Image 1: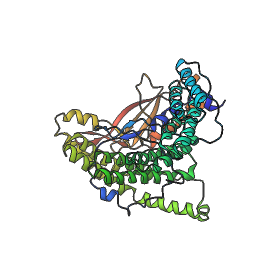
Image 2 (image 1 turned 180 degrees about the horizontal axis):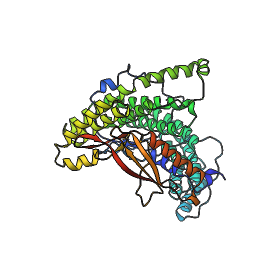
Image 3 (image 1 turned 180 degrees about the vertical axis):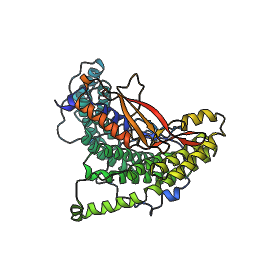
Image 4 (image 1 turned 60 degrees about the vertical axis):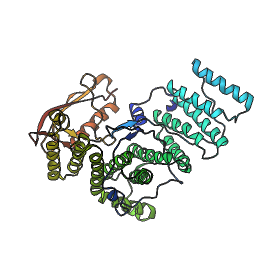
Length: 466
């Protein structure tokens, strides 16, 4: 069956489509000089003109949590060849749109200037009804006509491209989404008159590189390059925001959190390439890229620490040092240290945060919510090591384990698995992978009376077969 015509698509497709949303925040960094130091990590040549990929981000002033995502759309290249006819769907709304398009074509021709907007409306209606394969065709035609009427890099095609990418993601067409991102990023970067679009394009491109890395689009040989691009794009966005709004702009948190995610992924990267060292010796470009990545890798811990301290200074300047956002950032620094095995400084950082929490009006409540239960690291949206937890009533896979005072998982057992009759090989593979991930995951331990403590019988539920 053609996957594009199949009305059923995987949870992975839905999750990745939703994941292409930028995490928005507010606040600004102190160690900006360290973060932007060109000697800290050489800025990679980003494929802005040759092979760029990105969609626009709609940023929301999320004052509270830098991990709050905002939905974005994305898009694809449209060829100049005759495009396939849209499948008729028996819906009054869709019929009205199609009739309007037919009338415009009959009276004003196949390249009528109002057609791109009408095709956009039809595509969005198709998406709403779940007809993503047909929506792809409509958005492709709309982008094609927008280029004819508005120019090769005209902004009129952007919304078509964004929404086309969204449908590719829902359909699980990762390679097509990647190609469309390249087209979209080229269009956005060519429109230099709008700084906001430029910044959004950099941030969304960085987010796409992260998702493409997770999906391994393009194979293992491209994986570490995507992480370098993710870092570089966020750095460029950070620089642009500083130049435009100054080094106290709350919008600086957008690229700062993106840079922190990049450093988590860079420091945790394991080369998945099947090439040998002798293969790389014969490929100058690959060898240089590996050398550059090794430079990024070697400086990752220091760079991540500088980013978190920059975020801390922003939060402190906006909310005060004894504020909850600032204390949470201190805990974030402890997490970064502990995740890298720098245990004693991490414990000291946590204890300092506990003392600061005690000064808050709702100290006991805050301490309970932040440090009274173990937390898997990294504790940061976008790079969490485990799937989302669900309630025991909803979950079909339950596990129990303990977490030592040093953050290690012990005594891991399965309490409940998906019904044997309905368990497919894919579900069995998922449960096995989740068990391996749990064993490898480092946890922030819970704290009791200011000290790390062992936790027994931690029960977690996950939805695997849904």
